[in-house]
Length: 110
Image (cartoon, rainbow, N blue to C red; front, top):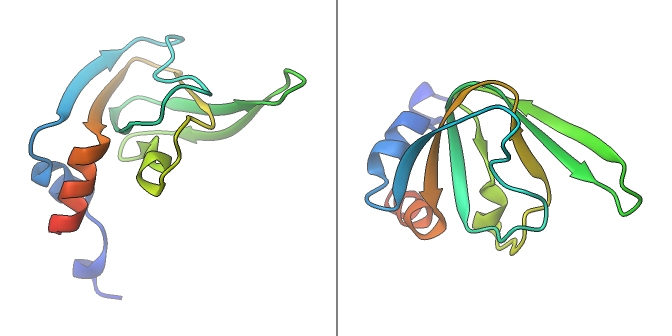
């Protein structure tokens, strides 16, 4: 596979026209919660984010620790209507929020 064939997140983010905002998020304040509507994708520019799921019995399982260059919430692009996990910053984070429609348009344009 040639390097040119790989997905470049910076190129993708530059193609998102409208529907994109940046924010700083403090630790412990959830970016999204399991069960919330799934209508946006997030990109981590700086910091670390914990993805966890809670079972019906109340047990939490950490499924990933994400960092700069990672996307989260992308399940909305596959038709998922509700968040299947909770995303909580572990450190101060810089996050780009991309509305589902804007992400789909940018992906189709590529």
